[in-house]
Every structure is written in C-alpha cells, then in structure tokens.
Image (cartoon, rainbow, N blue to C red; front, top):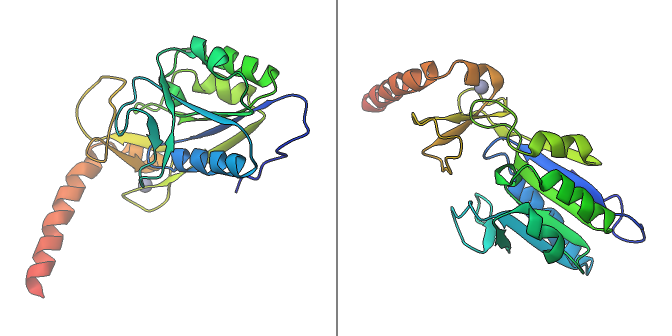
Length: 209
Ligand SMILES: [Zn+2]
C-alpha cells in the first residue's frame, strides 16, 4: 500500500502516478489518497477530462460507487490557474487529457503542489495511452495496480475490448471491456468462443442436479 512520504514541510511538490488496466482500482486508490489529504486538513482540488461523463458530470466515481467532487476540464492549459492556492491536486482519467498535461503537472509540482494522477497505462490495443507514458517517466512515485483476469484468475494488466469497434476512446462499462492477463489477452476472441461453450456445459451441468 502506498503511504505518503510526508504531508507537509516540504518546499517543493511532487508527482504520483497510479496506473493500470480497467477495473484495477485506480480511481479507488486516487480517492483513498485524496481523502487522506483532506483528513490532514490539506486543500484538495480534483480534475477530470470533460470527455469522461460516464457516471456523473462533476464527480469522479470508481466502479464500486465511491465518489468525490471534481471539476471537468476541456484542456490541461486551465489546470495551473484552477490549482492556485491548493496543496494537493488529483487528476483522474489522465489518459484522455491532451499531450500538454505532463508539462502542466511539472508546473504544478514547481508551485509546491502534490499532484496525484490516475489513468490507463495502455489502450485496448495494448499501446501506451495518451500522455501516460510521459507522466510515468517524470513522476517521483508510480503505483501500478492490477485487476484480476476474468478467464484464469491471474493478475490482469490488459483491457480487452469485447465489442468490435476500432474507436480509440470508447468509454465503457462491463459490457465493452474485461480485464485479462497477458496470455489471455493474446488469445483474443478464442476465449470468447470458449466462454460460450463453457456456458452451455454449465447449463447442462445444472440440468443434472
Ligand atoms: Zn488470464
């Protein structure tokens, strides 16, 4: 578990990145850290990209319905102005921000702000996502969280897209994506077929009892 290196008495800020696949608990971990900063009486501001309106316009919400208020922004440019006077800044779904985000985050850290960034490290094709690889390079602290592979139960690092759509940004739910380990991800839709077959076998089993 990540424990804060220190809450106060440091003259400069720093960057923390929480990354992983879908359903790995990134937002949950971001909310946990921001809540702890609030308990320490720090001034906390939270942003998310305006593109992500899956659950709630002004809140960031984890998959298990944990919520915290946030400001939707269209561009990373406005973050410096909106972060003035705050000690901790949280940024969720960072992969959807523009490529200017890393420079903005460094500016925030130079202002003495602790910046906590959560985002998908890879898109559904397994490639680095938006500004995330740059952010991972410049951060002081990195936490990679893992989901559980729905097929074999090992740690999942990949977000497998279950529906046939080549749009890079497909905001999704459990119908659209599932977490998979590398091996099961590489097997692609062979596993989808096996799942259907398995379902039929399960149904037959149920008939026997
Ligand atoms: Zn697997």
